[in-house]
Length: 416
Image (cartoon, rainbow, N blue to C red; front, side, top):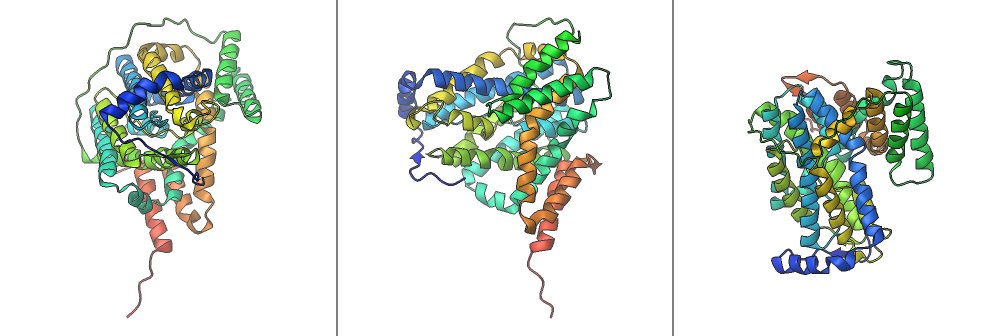
């Protein structure tokens, strides 16, 4: 995405500036900003939250631990969005990492929750250190973008396949899948901002008509966070923390920065990395895996539809953060709500929600003919879903992709 000719610089972080931006906040709020903030919150409660819930089930987490995880990433991300947006006077959105949640579906079967929490803390501190050191760009050159995107596509592949793998599991599954897929792409054709919301609504109607919705008992009381003491191991650092950082940098931070620049802002790169990294480490004690810079959601809050004046769009991000804090307090109710639907509903909405990310990841991984070999082998290795030396496939996908890229394009040794 090309840089905007007149980029708005981030405000210098200070208490006085924070208070001034807070005082100006009412003048930034409009119907468009409230609507855009609400849409961002709804998007996080369609496909992405289902991926998180599947990871929790795969890891054998209790309902209380799962609810705490949901609350930590939603409320924590909302709080971080409000804080950074007011601090820098820019629309800085900090959702939880969808790619990270997908990675954990496999990883939580290999490591205990305390080991995973230790890895989350390591990952958050690593991101913060990148901000302190200013080495973000240099690290992104070590792992080629094509390889990182190929690993992301490999991690998410199972969700795309999950849309159709359940077709023959039950007699009514083809009807459910056809209805949800059809509505999703009809809305995509009409450029609807969140087609997964339409697929979600149709899926609920079909499930209700077929009598596939179980009795529901929502706990509307605020969720109590569950503290988990971390355990630090080398295998978890390599198998969870390293892929979590690389996927976040390549699939969230890099495109998120590009979205901000493309809409007229000079993002405070190091400040975002430090703030989100420290926030992620703090949320880890309650099960939260990663808060990152938004890419898809950033495009919603930074556009003119949300607020015509670029200097006032930070208010849209603040509204989005408030929506997340209010709704995220009821993490247990979210878990209960999605538990009443049949598995095909969950797998279909998750796959559809990630279809765009899978397509863009594959496209970005394979567009460069010179680096296609490394990208393909990284994709195949990651999609293989195996464990070697106690470390999962995403780590080995990164390693193999980087090694093949070096083998194909490194300097040739001179003989003699």
